[in-house]
Length: 304
Image 1 (tube, rainbow, N blue to C red):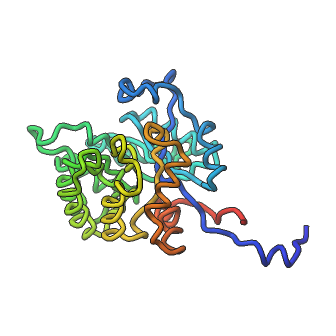
Image 2 (image 1 turned 60 degrees about the horizontal axis):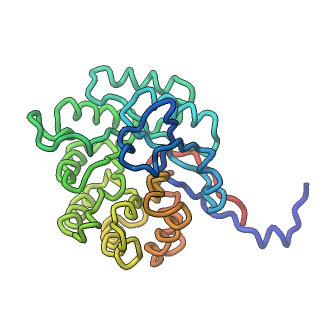
């Protein structure tokens, strides 16, 4: 088939757009205990539910992230990667503290969809701070596991509370050979209206080159009446100033974001918070950063 030269001249292939953070689950397969007090999330959420939103907003690929620390869930997410072209990567779970972590990773990578494994995550936010054997991220057995991830070229996603940021910063500092991605900007205390010490900790974290940040979760951290640009800019500003576009990646946190806003509104608020960026910087936040940090195989976006 030939292409009209005039039509080709007017067409532009845009950079790929990636949603770097979303979840799926089937409650008949596995409960999500953390949703029991969140009735809006007490149902199944599948990739088929999300895809119309991705189509409507020009999102080419996604990264699906674990929700509960379950090896079985990771296997299921890898199968989803194998069978669904939209999913470009999986951040799963494996026990970082096990002595045979390397063998576990080999088994996962040999399983169906195993090439889609780009990183691991652990629900650090649920670990008690200052436990008898130290903060979870700074334990010796965890440290060994984090080094194994670095050796295998896998990322560790940090899901921590704002109070746990000092431990997260120290973990990133101690493991320069491992790449980290901070989920949901470290959960700034937006509902409390506090910017410090969160902003100072973002400054400290940004000095470490082996960490990027997900520009995600801000709406759900805000309280009622705070989910507008004016209330969120004091938190977006430090992220942009400290990390720059090439260390920030957009993530919807769907379906958790629906507690605060639907997918389209989440994107529109994000766009408003990023309005000062130029085209190249926006292309990084909406795709390039995730592709680089996770090593995703994502082609160019659709012709517009």
